[in-house]
Length: 566
Image (cartoon, rainbow, N blue to C red; front, side, top):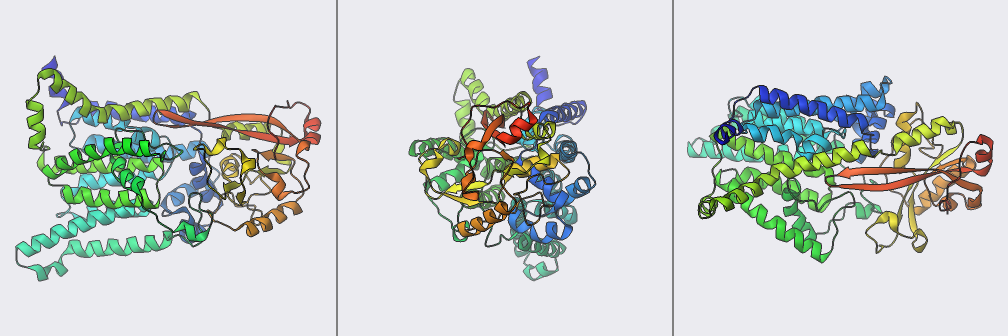
Protein backbone atom coordinates (compact mmCIF):
# COMPACT_ATOMS: atom_id res chain seq x y z
CA UNK A 1 0.00 0.00 0.00
CA UNK A 2 2.85 2.35 0.91
CA UNK A 3 4.68 1.64 -2.33
CA UNK A 4 1.48 2.07 -4.31
CA UNK A 5 0.93 5.48 -2.73
CA UNK A 6 4.52 6.52 -3.49
CA UNK A 7 4.08 5.42 -7.08
CA UNK A 8 0.95 7.55 -7.38
CA UNK A 9 2.23 10.55 -5.42
CA UNK A 10 5.46 10.96 -7.38
CA UNK A 11 4.07 10.13 -10.79
CA UNK A 12 4.22 12.96 -13.33
CA UNK A 13 1.51 11.53 -15.55
CA UNK A 14 -1.54 13.69 -16.17
CA UNK A 15 -5.00 12.23 -16.07
CA UNK A 16 -8.17 11.79 -14.02
CA UNK A 17 -6.58 13.09 -10.84
CA UNK A 18 -5.92 16.47 -12.48
CA UNK A 19 -9.47 16.66 -13.80
CA UNK A 20 -10.90 15.84 -10.37
CA UNK A 21 -8.61 18.42 -8.71
CA UNK A 22 -9.67 21.09 -11.18
CA UNK A 23 -13.35 20.32 -10.56
CA UNK A 24 -12.86 20.47 -6.77
CA UNK A 25 -10.94 23.73 -7.14
CA UNK A 26 -13.64 25.28 -9.31
CA UNK A 27 -16.42 24.15 -6.99
CA UNK A 28 -14.45 25.42 -4.01
CA UNK A 29 -13.82 28.95 -5.28
CA UNK A 30 -17.37 29.20 -6.63
CA UNK A 31 -18.73 28.26 -3.21
CA UNK A 32 -16.58 30.72 -1.27
CA UNK A 33 -17.13 33.42 -3.92
CA UNK A 34 -20.88 33.01 -3.49
CA UNK A 35 -20.51 34.18 0.13
CA UNK A 36 -17.68 36.66 -0.50
CA UNK A 37 -18.56 40.35 -0.64
CA UNK A 38 -16.17 42.58 -2.62
CA UNK A 39 -13.72 44.63 -0.60
CA UNK A 40 -12.68 48.19 -1.43
CA UNK A 41 -10.01 47.23 -3.98
CA UNK A 42 -12.49 45.07 -5.87
CA UNK A 43 -15.16 47.77 -5.75
CA UNK A 44 -12.70 50.42 -6.90
CA UNK A 45 -11.88 48.45 -10.06
CA UNK A 46 -15.56 47.96 -10.82
CA UNK A 47 -16.27 51.66 -10.21
CA UNK A 48 -13.46 52.66 -12.58
CA UNK A 49 -14.81 50.32 -15.25
CA UNK A 50 -18.36 51.61 -14.74
CA UNK A 51 -17.88 55.37 -14.54
CA UNK A 52 -14.45 56.00 -16.03
CA UNK A 53 -14.18 56.90 -19.71
CA UNK A 54 -11.89 54.86 -21.95
CA UNK A 55 -9.57 57.86 -22.17
CA UNK A 56 -9.42 58.13 -18.37
CA UNK A 57 -8.88 54.39 -17.97
CA UNK A 58 -6.02 54.36 -20.48
CA UNK A 59 -4.22 57.63 -19.81
CA UNK A 60 -5.21 59.18 -16.47
CA UNK A 61 -6.30 56.63 -13.88
CA UNK A 62 -3.19 54.37 -14.14
CA UNK A 63 -1.03 57.20 -12.80
CA UNK A 64 -3.00 57.01 -9.54
CA UNK A 65 -3.81 53.28 -9.43
CA UNK A 66 -0.19 52.19 -9.97
CA UNK A 67 -0.86 49.37 -12.41
CA UNK A 68 -1.79 49.08 -16.11
CA UNK A 69 -5.41 49.45 -17.23
CA UNK A 70 -5.98 45.94 -18.66
CA UNK A 71 -8.03 44.69 -15.68
CA UNK A 72 -10.30 47.74 -15.83
CA UNK A 73 -10.73 47.31 -19.59
CA UNK A 74 -11.75 43.68 -19.13
CA UNK A 75 -14.39 44.70 -16.57
CA UNK A 76 -15.63 47.65 -18.64
CA UNK A 77 -18.16 45.80 -20.88
CA UNK A 78 -19.78 44.16 -17.84
CA UNK A 79 -19.85 47.30 -15.71
CA UNK A 80 -21.04 49.70 -18.41
CA UNK A 81 -23.76 47.34 -19.67
CA UNK A 82 -25.25 46.98 -16.21
CA UNK A 83 -24.26 43.38 -15.49
CA UNK A 84 -24.74 42.21 -11.86
CA UNK A 85 -21.91 43.59 -9.76
CA UNK A 86 -20.85 40.73 -7.47
CA UNK A 87 -21.66 37.96 -9.96
CA UNK A 88 -19.82 39.54 -12.89
CA UNK A 89 -16.77 40.46 -10.86
CA UNK A 90 -16.49 36.94 -9.44
CA UNK A 91 -17.16 35.25 -12.79
CA UNK A 92 -14.37 37.13 -14.57
CA UNK A 93 -11.90 36.39 -11.79
CA UNK A 94 -12.87 32.72 -11.54
CA UNK A 95 -12.53 32.31 -15.31
CA UNK A 96 -8.93 33.52 -15.41
CA UNK A 97 -7.83 31.85 -12.18
CA UNK A 98 -9.34 28.52 -13.25
CA UNK A 99 -7.40 28.80 -16.50
CA UNK A 100 -4.22 29.40 -14.48
CA UNK A 101 -4.87 26.35 -12.31
CA UNK A 102 -5.69 24.25 -15.40
CA UNK A 103 -2.31 25.20 -16.86
CA UNK A 104 -0.67 24.22 -13.58
CA UNK A 105 -2.45 20.87 -13.44
CA UNK A 106 -2.19 19.79 -17.07
CA UNK A 107 1.10 21.36 -18.15
CA UNK A 108 3.38 21.44 -15.12
CA UNK A 109 5.97 18.70 -14.47
CA UNK A 110 5.35 18.52 -10.71
CA UNK A 111 4.71 15.12 -9.12
CA UNK A 112 1.03 14.33 -8.82
CA UNK A 113 0.70 14.91 -5.07
CA UNK A 114 2.33 18.34 -5.25
CA UNK A 115 0.35 19.22 -8.38
CA UNK A 116 -2.92 18.39 -6.65
CA UNK A 117 -2.10 20.37 -3.50
CA UNK A 118 -0.75 23.54 -5.10
CA UNK A 119 -4.12 24.82 -6.42
CA UNK A 120 -5.36 24.99 -2.83
CA UNK A 121 -2.45 27.15 -1.71
CA UNK A 122 -3.83 30.20 0.11
CA UNK A 123 -2.79 32.65 -2.60
CA UNK A 124 -3.87 30.52 -5.56
CA UNK A 125 -7.18 29.56 -3.97
CA UNK A 126 -8.43 32.31 -1.64
CA UNK A 127 -6.38 35.43 -2.23
CA UNK A 128 -6.40 35.26 -6.03
CA UNK A 129 -9.25 32.83 -6.69
CA UNK A 130 -11.94 34.35 -4.47
CA UNK A 131 -10.84 37.99 -4.21
CA UNK A 132 -11.32 39.54 -7.65
CA UNK A 133 -8.17 41.40 -8.58
CA UNK A 134 -5.83 41.48 -11.62
CA UNK A 135 -3.53 38.95 -9.92
CA UNK A 136 -5.55 36.12 -11.43
CA UNK A 137 -4.26 37.15 -14.87
CA UNK A 138 -0.72 37.74 -13.58
CA UNK A 139 -0.61 34.19 -12.17
CA UNK A 140 -1.94 32.88 -15.50
CA UNK A 141 0.81 34.75 -17.36
CA UNK A 142 3.50 33.41 -15.02
CA UNK A 143 2.31 29.83 -15.43
CA UNK A 144 2.06 30.17 -19.22
CA UNK A 145 5.60 31.57 -19.24
CA UNK A 146 6.73 28.51 -17.29
CA UNK A 147 5.17 26.27 -19.95
CA UNK A 148 6.99 28.14 -22.71
CA UNK A 149 10.28 28.57 -20.86
CA UNK A 150 11.93 25.30 -21.92
CA UNK A 151 11.44 26.01 -25.63
CA UNK A 152 11.87 29.79 -25.45
CA UNK A 153 14.81 29.74 -27.84
CA UNK A 154 12.94 27.69 -30.46
CA UNK A 155 9.63 29.52 -29.99
CA UNK A 156 10.49 32.97 -28.60
CA UNK A 157 7.21 34.58 -29.69
CA UNK A 158 5.11 32.37 -27.40
CA UNK A 159 7.36 33.04 -24.42
CA UNK A 160 7.49 36.78 -25.02
CA UNK A 161 3.72 37.00 -25.41
CA UNK A 162 3.46 35.56 -21.89
CA UNK A 163 5.90 38.18 -20.64
CA UNK A 164 3.94 40.88 -22.48
CA UNK A 165 0.78 39.76 -20.65
CA UNK A 166 2.66 40.10 -17.35
CA UNK A 167 3.64 43.65 -18.26
CA UNK A 168 0.13 44.57 -19.36
CA UNK A 169 -1.63 43.43 -16.20
CA UNK A 170 0.45 44.64 -13.25
CA UNK A 171 3.49 46.71 -12.27
CA UNK A 172 4.96 43.66 -10.52
CA UNK A 173 4.63 41.87 -13.86
CA UNK A 174 6.86 44.53 -15.42
CA UNK A 175 9.56 43.72 -12.88
CA UNK A 176 9.31 39.95 -13.36
CA UNK A 177 9.27 40.14 -17.16
CA UNK A 178 12.17 42.60 -17.19
CA UNK A 179 14.35 40.42 -14.97
CA UNK A 180 13.57 37.27 -16.98
CA UNK A 181 14.57 39.12 -20.16
CA UNK A 182 17.85 40.26 -18.60
CA UNK A 183 18.68 36.65 -17.68
CA UNK A 184 17.77 35.52 -21.19
CA UNK A 185 19.93 38.23 -22.77
CA UNK A 186 22.88 37.13 -20.62
CA UNK A 187 22.37 33.55 -21.81
CA UNK A 188 22.19 34.68 -25.45
CA UNK A 189 25.29 36.86 -25.02
CA UNK A 190 27.19 33.93 -23.47
CA UNK A 191 26.04 31.67 -26.29
CA UNK A 192 27.42 33.99 -28.97
CA UNK A 193 30.61 34.74 -27.06
CA UNK A 194 31.44 31.06 -26.68
CA UNK A 195 30.93 30.53 -30.42
CA UNK A 196 33.12 33.58 -31.17
CA UNK A 197 30.31 35.17 -33.18
CA UNK A 198 29.42 38.02 -30.85
CA UNK A 199 28.80 40.44 -33.72
CA UNK A 200 25.93 38.27 -34.95
CA UNK A 201 23.92 38.94 -31.78
CA UNK A 202 22.41 42.04 -33.42
CA UNK A 203 20.80 39.77 -36.00
CA UNK A 204 19.25 37.46 -33.44
CA UNK A 205 15.46 37.34 -33.70
CA UNK A 206 15.12 36.82 -29.96
CA UNK A 207 16.91 40.09 -29.21
CA UNK A 208 14.69 42.04 -31.60
CA UNK A 209 11.58 40.51 -30.08
CA UNK A 210 12.81 41.49 -26.63
CA UNK A 211 13.42 45.00 -27.93
CA UNK A 212 9.77 45.14 -29.01
CA UNK A 213 8.78 43.97 -25.52
CA UNK A 214 11.00 46.69 -24.06
CA UNK A 215 9.13 49.33 -26.06
CA UNK A 216 5.81 47.97 -24.76
CA UNK A 217 7.15 47.90 -21.20
CA UNK A 218 8.40 51.49 -21.43
CA UNK A 219 5.03 52.67 -22.74
CA UNK A 220 3.26 50.89 -19.89
CA UNK A 221 5.75 52.26 -17.39
CA UNK A 222 5.10 55.79 -18.65
CA UNK A 223 1.35 55.22 -18.34
CA UNK A 224 1.61 54.17 -14.67
CA UNK A 225 4.31 56.61 -13.58
CA UNK A 226 2.81 58.19 -10.43
CA UNK A 227 1.82 61.83 -10.52
CA UNK A 228 3.36 64.19 -7.97
CA UNK A 229 0.10 64.38 -6.01
CA UNK A 230 -0.59 60.66 -5.72
CA UNK A 231 -1.68 59.45 -2.29
CA UNK A 232 0.43 56.51 -1.12
CA UNK A 233 -0.28 54.71 2.13
CA UNK A 234 -0.86 57.55 4.53
CA UNK A 235 1.75 59.99 3.22
CA UNK A 236 0.56 63.50 4.02
CA UNK A 237 2.44 65.57 1.48
CA UNK A 238 3.73 65.27 -2.06
CA UNK A 239 7.38 65.12 -1.10
CA UNK A 240 6.87 62.20 1.29
CA UNK A 241 5.21 60.12 -1.44
CA UNK A 242 8.52 59.52 -3.17
CA UNK A 243 10.90 59.52 -0.22
CA UNK A 244 12.60 56.20 0.47
CA UNK A 245 14.06 55.07 3.77
CA UNK A 246 15.96 51.86 4.38
CA UNK A 247 16.36 50.31 7.80
CA UNK A 248 16.95 46.94 9.41
CA UNK A 249 13.28 46.03 9.04
CA UNK A 250 13.41 46.60 5.25
CA UNK A 251 16.40 44.26 4.98
CA UNK A 252 14.70 41.56 7.07
CA UNK A 253 11.47 41.88 5.07
CA UNK A 254 13.53 41.22 1.92
CA UNK A 255 14.19 37.71 3.26
CA UNK A 256 10.79 37.26 4.91
CA UNK A 257 8.89 37.58 1.63
CA UNK A 258 10.02 34.08 0.69
CA UNK A 259 8.83 32.43 3.90
CA UNK A 260 5.62 34.49 3.94
CA UNK A 261 4.62 32.90 0.64
CA UNK A 262 4.64 29.37 2.05
CA UNK A 263 5.27 29.14 5.79
CA UNK A 264 5.12 32.18 8.06
CA UNK A 265 2.50 34.80 8.97
CA UNK A 266 4.33 37.93 10.03
CA UNK A 267 2.24 40.07 7.65
CA UNK A 268 -1.40 40.98 8.15
CA UNK A 269 -3.68 43.82 7.08
CA UNK A 270 -2.19 46.02 9.78
CA UNK A 271 1.26 45.53 8.21
CA UNK A 272 4.23 44.21 10.21
CA UNK A 273 4.72 44.87 13.90
CA UNK A 274 7.99 46.81 13.83
CA UNK A 275 9.31 45.87 17.26
CA UNK A 276 12.87 44.75 17.93
CA UNK A 277 11.74 41.32 19.16
CA UNK A 278 9.51 40.79 16.13
CA UNK A 279 12.29 41.85 13.74
CA UNK A 280 14.73 39.45 15.41
CA UNK A 281 12.17 36.63 15.26
CA UNK A 282 11.61 37.24 11.55
CA UNK A 283 15.34 37.28 10.89
CA UNK A 284 15.96 34.06 12.82
CA UNK A 285 13.26 32.26 10.86
CA UNK A 286 13.50 33.78 7.40
CA UNK A 287 17.24 34.18 6.76
CA UNK A 288 18.23 30.53 7.41
CA UNK A 289 15.32 29.27 5.29
CA UNK A 290 16.27 31.67 2.51
CA UNK A 291 19.90 30.49 2.57
CA UNK A 292 18.84 26.83 2.47
CA UNK A 293 16.49 27.51 -0.44
CA UNK A 294 19.23 29.44 -2.24
CA UNK A 295 21.61 26.47 -2.02
CA UNK A 296 18.84 24.34 -3.52
CA UNK A 297 18.40 26.83 -6.35
CA UNK A 298 22.15 27.05 -6.92
CA UNK A 299 22.47 23.27 -7.16
CA UNK A 300 19.87 23.32 -9.93
CA UNK A 301 21.58 26.18 -11.81
CA UNK A 302 18.79 28.73 -11.42
CA UNK A 303 20.65 31.13 -9.13
CA UNK A 304 20.81 34.06 -11.52
CA UNK A 305 17.18 33.80 -12.60
CA UNK A 306 15.79 33.47 -9.08
CA UNK A 307 18.10 35.89 -7.25
CA UNK A 308 17.72 38.64 -9.85
CA UNK A 309 13.95 38.32 -10.19
CA UNK A 310 13.26 37.75 -6.50
CA UNK A 311 15.86 40.33 -5.50
CA UNK A 312 14.50 43.22 -7.57
CA UNK A 313 10.90 42.33 -6.73
CA UNK A 314 11.71 42.09 -3.02
CA UNK A 315 13.65 45.38 -2.99
CA UNK A 316 10.68 47.15 -4.58
CA UNK A 317 8.30 45.48 -2.13
CA UNK A 318 10.31 46.07 1.04
CA UNK A 319 11.33 49.67 0.29
CA UNK A 320 8.69 51.17 -2.02
CA UNK A 321 5.31 49.50 -1.51
CA UNK A 322 3.77 46.18 -0.54
CA UNK A 323 0.45 44.84 0.73
CA UNK A 324 -0.11 41.34 2.14
CA UNK A 325 -1.83 40.18 -1.05
CA UNK A 326 1.36 40.91 -3.05
CA UNK A 327 3.10 38.05 -1.24
CA UNK A 328 1.31 35.61 -3.55
CA UNK A 329 3.40 36.91 -6.45
CA UNK A 330 6.44 35.48 -4.66
CA UNK A 331 4.56 32.19 -4.31
CA UNK A 332 4.02 32.17 -8.07
CA UNK A 333 7.67 33.03 -8.67
CA UNK A 334 8.86 30.09 -6.54
CA UNK A 335 6.48 27.77 -8.41
CA UNK A 336 7.78 29.17 -11.71
CA UNK A 337 11.42 28.59 -10.69
CA UNK A 338 10.95 24.98 -9.58
CA UNK A 339 8.69 24.33 -12.60
CA UNK A 340 11.46 25.39 -15.02
CA UNK A 341 13.98 23.22 -13.15
CA UNK A 342 11.83 20.13 -13.53
CA UNK A 343 10.99 20.93 -17.14
CA UNK A 344 14.62 21.25 -18.18
CA UNK A 345 16.18 18.44 -16.10
CA UNK A 346 13.18 16.17 -15.43
CA UNK A 347 14.19 16.24 -11.75
CA UNK A 348 15.57 18.53 -9.08
CA UNK A 349 19.04 18.03 -7.66
CA UNK A 350 19.38 17.96 -3.87
CA UNK A 351 22.51 19.64 -2.44
CA UNK A 352 25.06 17.19 -1.05
CA UNK A 353 24.93 18.62 2.47
CA UNK A 354 21.17 18.03 2.58
CA UNK A 355 21.62 14.41 1.52
CA UNK A 356 24.37 13.90 4.12
CA UNK A 357 22.17 15.30 6.89
CA UNK A 358 19.23 13.18 5.76
CA UNK A 359 21.27 9.97 5.50
CA UNK A 360 23.02 10.56 8.84
CA UNK A 361 19.84 10.37 10.92
CA UNK A 362 17.57 7.46 11.75
CA UNK A 363 14.31 6.69 9.97
CA UNK A 364 12.17 8.51 12.55
CA UNK A 365 14.13 11.73 12.14
CA UNK A 366 13.97 11.28 8.38
CA UNK A 367 10.20 11.25 8.68
CA UNK A 368 10.37 14.43 10.77
CA UNK A 369 12.53 16.12 8.11
CA UNK A 370 10.09 15.08 5.39
CA UNK A 371 7.21 16.46 7.43
CA UNK A 372 9.02 19.79 7.97
CA UNK A 373 9.57 20.13 4.21
CA UNK A 374 5.96 19.18 3.50
CA UNK A 375 4.74 22.05 5.71
CA UNK A 376 5.42 24.38 2.77
CA UNK A 377 2.55 22.60 1.01
CA UNK A 378 0.31 21.86 3.99
CA UNK A 379 0.27 25.21 5.82
CA UNK A 380 -0.92 27.26 2.79
CA UNK A 381 -3.79 24.80 2.33
CA UNK A 382 -4.77 25.32 5.98
CA UNK A 383 -4.61 29.08 5.41
CA UNK A 384 -7.09 28.63 2.56
CA UNK A 385 -9.42 26.56 4.71
CA UNK A 386 -9.44 29.02 7.62
CA UNK A 387 -9.82 32.14 5.45
CA UNK A 388 -12.58 30.49 3.43
CA UNK A 389 -14.37 29.53 6.64
CA UNK A 390 -14.18 33.12 7.89
CA UNK A 391 -15.46 34.44 4.56
CA UNK A 392 -18.41 32.05 4.57
CA UNK A 393 -19.13 32.35 8.29
CA UNK A 394 -18.85 36.13 8.65
CA UNK A 395 -20.19 38.86 6.43
CA UNK A 396 -18.38 41.86 5.10
CA UNK A 397 -20.23 45.12 5.62
CA UNK A 398 -20.94 46.58 2.14
CA UNK A 399 -23.90 44.43 1.17
CA UNK A 400 -25.59 44.79 4.55
CA UNK A 401 -25.12 48.56 4.49
CA UNK A 402 -26.59 48.79 0.98
CA UNK A 403 -29.56 46.63 1.98
CA UNK A 404 -30.20 48.82 5.01
CA UNK A 405 -30.09 51.98 2.91
CA UNK A 406 -32.49 50.47 0.39
CA UNK A 407 -34.85 49.09 3.04
CA UNK A 408 -35.41 52.52 4.59
CA UNK A 409 -34.99 54.47 1.32
CA UNK A 410 -32.16 56.48 2.82
CA UNK A 411 -30.77 57.09 -0.67
CA UNK A 412 -33.64 59.56 -1.10
CA UNK A 413 -31.90 61.77 1.47
CA UNK A 414 -28.53 63.51 1.70
CA UNK A 415 -25.95 60.87 2.67
CA UNK A 416 -22.49 61.88 3.83
CA UNK A 417 -19.74 59.28 3.69
CA UNK A 418 -16.70 58.95 5.92
CA UNK A 419 -13.47 60.40 4.48
CA UNK A 420 -9.83 59.47 5.03
CA UNK A 421 -8.04 61.19 7.92
CA UNK A 422 -4.42 60.79 9.01
CA UNK A 423 -2.94 62.03 12.32
CA UNK A 424 -0.26 64.71 11.94
CA UNK A 425 1.97 62.95 14.46
CA UNK A 426 2.67 59.29 15.16
CA UNK A 427 0.47 57.53 17.68
CA UNK A 428 1.55 54.88 20.13
CA UNK A 429 -1.07 52.25 19.40
CA UNK A 430 -0.51 49.70 16.65
CA UNK A 431 -4.26 49.62 16.15
CA UNK A 432 -5.31 52.65 14.12
CA UNK A 433 -8.96 52.06 14.95
CA UNK A 434 -8.31 51.89 18.67
CA UNK A 435 -6.76 55.30 19.25
CA UNK A 436 -8.54 58.18 21.00
CA UNK A 437 -9.16 60.62 18.17
CA UNK A 438 -9.43 63.64 20.44
CA UNK A 439 -5.76 63.30 21.42
CA UNK A 440 -4.51 64.01 17.91
CA UNK A 441 -4.70 66.62 15.21
CA UNK A 442 -5.78 65.20 11.88
CA UNK A 443 -5.16 65.92 8.22
CA UNK A 444 -8.25 65.42 6.04
CA UNK A 445 -8.52 63.88 2.59
CA UNK A 446 -12.16 64.59 1.67
CA UNK A 447 -12.03 62.88 -1.73
CA UNK A 448 -10.65 59.62 -0.36
CA UNK A 449 -13.85 57.82 0.58
CA UNK A 450 -13.36 54.08 0.61
CA UNK A 451 -16.77 53.45 2.21
CA UNK A 452 -18.53 55.36 -0.56
CA UNK A 453 -16.61 53.44 -3.24
CA UNK A 454 -17.55 50.12 -1.62
CA UNK A 455 -21.28 50.89 -1.30
CA UNK A 456 -21.98 52.71 -4.59
CA UNK A 457 -21.74 49.61 -6.85
CA UNK A 458 -24.95 48.33 -5.24
CA UNK A 459 -26.79 51.35 -6.65
CA UNK A 460 -27.17 52.68 -10.18
CA UNK A 461 -25.78 56.08 -9.21
CA UNK A 462 -23.58 57.81 -6.66
CA UNK A 463 -25.70 58.09 -3.50
CA UNK A 464 -23.20 60.24 -1.53
CA UNK A 465 -23.56 63.96 -2.08
CA UNK A 466 -20.09 64.67 -0.64
CA UNK A 467 -18.27 62.10 -2.81
CA UNK A 468 -16.78 63.55 -6.01
CA UNK A 469 -18.98 66.60 -5.54
CA UNK A 470 -17.58 68.23 -8.69
CA UNK A 471 -18.33 65.10 -10.74
CA UNK A 472 -21.13 63.16 -8.99
CA UNK A 473 -21.40 60.60 -11.80
CA UNK A 474 -17.91 59.33 -10.90
CA UNK A 475 -18.06 56.50 -8.38
CA UNK A 476 -14.34 55.73 -8.00
CA UNK A 477 -11.85 57.71 -5.97
CA UNK A 478 -8.70 59.34 -7.29
CA UNK A 479 -5.79 58.52 -5.02
CA UNK A 480 -4.77 62.16 -4.71
CA UNK A 481 -3.22 63.86 -1.73
CA UNK A 482 -4.15 67.37 -0.67
CA UNK A 483 -3.27 70.11 1.78
CA UNK A 484 -5.53 70.99 4.67
CA UNK A 485 -6.33 74.25 2.88
CA UNK A 486 -7.59 72.29 -0.12
CA UNK A 487 -9.60 70.10 2.24
CA UNK A 488 -11.27 73.20 3.69
CA UNK A 489 -12.23 74.29 0.18
CA UNK A 490 -13.84 70.90 -0.36
CA UNK A 491 -15.71 71.16 2.94
CA UNK A 492 -17.07 74.54 1.84
CA UNK A 493 -18.64 72.88 -1.21
CA UNK A 494 -20.30 70.33 1.06
CA UNK A 495 -21.76 73.08 3.23
CA UNK A 496 -23.40 74.59 0.15
CA UNK A 497 -25.44 71.37 -0.09
CA UNK A 498 -26.69 71.73 3.48
CA UNK A 499 -26.23 69.44 6.46
CA UNK A 500 -26.53 65.68 5.87
CA UNK A 501 -29.56 63.62 6.78
CA UNK A 502 -27.55 60.38 6.99
CA UNK A 503 -23.90 59.84 7.94
CA UNK A 504 -22.11 56.58 7.13
CA UNK A 505 -19.51 55.91 9.84
CA UNK A 506 -18.36 58.17 12.64
CA UNK A 507 -16.31 61.08 11.33
CA UNK A 508 -15.04 64.48 12.40
CA UNK A 509 -18.09 66.16 10.92
CA UNK A 510 -17.55 69.40 12.82
CA UNK A 511 -14.60 70.15 10.57
CA UNK A 512 -16.87 70.21 7.55
CA UNK A 513 -19.84 71.70 9.44
CA UNK A 514 -18.55 73.86 12.34
CA UNK A 515 -22.07 74.84 13.41
CA UNK A 516 -23.62 71.37 13.28
CA UNK A 517 -25.28 69.94 16.38
CA UNK A 518 -23.89 66.40 16.74
CA UNK A 519 -26.55 65.69 19.39
CA UNK A 520 -29.09 65.90 16.59
CA UNK A 521 -27.81 62.58 15.14
CA UNK A 522 -28.61 59.14 16.48
CA UNK A 523 -26.93 55.82 15.68
CA UNK A 524 -29.37 53.40 14.05
CA UNK A 525 -27.23 50.63 12.59
CA UNK A 526 -23.96 48.93 13.49
CA UNK A 527 -22.45 46.61 10.89
CA UNK A 528 -19.53 44.35 11.73
CA UNK A 529 -17.08 43.31 9.07
CA UNK A 530 -14.39 40.65 8.87
CA UNK A 531 -11.44 40.58 6.49
CA UNK A 532 -9.63 37.20 6.51
CA UNK A 533 -5.93 36.71 5.92
CA UNK A 534 -4.37 33.29 6.50
CA UNK A 535 -5.16 32.27 10.11
CA UNK A 536 -6.39 35.73 11.15
CA UNK A 537 -9.39 37.91 10.47
CA UNK A 538 -9.31 41.67 10.70
CA UNK A 539 -12.58 42.71 12.34
CA UNK A 540 -14.17 46.11 12.88
CA UNK A 541 -17.55 47.77 12.51
CA UNK A 542 -19.11 50.83 10.97
CA UNK A 543 -22.03 52.86 12.32
CA UNK A 544 -24.84 54.57 10.44
CA UNK A 545 -26.32 57.78 11.88
CA UNK A 546 -29.49 59.69 10.94
CA UNK A 547 -30.93 62.97 12.14
CA UNK A 548 -33.57 62.83 14.86
CA UNK A 549 -36.10 64.30 12.44
CA UNK A 550 -35.49 61.51 9.94
CA UNK A 551 -35.48 58.97 12.77
CA UNK A 552 -38.93 60.12 13.86
CA UNK A 553 -40.17 60.37 10.28
CA UNK A 554 -39.28 56.77 9.45
CA UNK A 555 -40.59 55.56 12.78
CA UNK A 556 -39.35 51.98 12.59
CA UNK A 557 -35.65 52.55 13.29
CA UNK A 558 -34.09 51.66 16.63
CA UNK A 559 -31.59 53.92 18.36
CA UNK A 560 -28.28 52.31 19.35
CA UNK A 561 -25.85 53.24 22.08
CA UNK A 562 -22.83 54.65 20.26
CA UNK A 563 -20.30 57.47 20.30
CA UNK A 564 -21.43 60.81 18.95
CA UNK A 565 -20.24 61.86 15.52
CA UNK A 566 -17.77 64.32 17.13
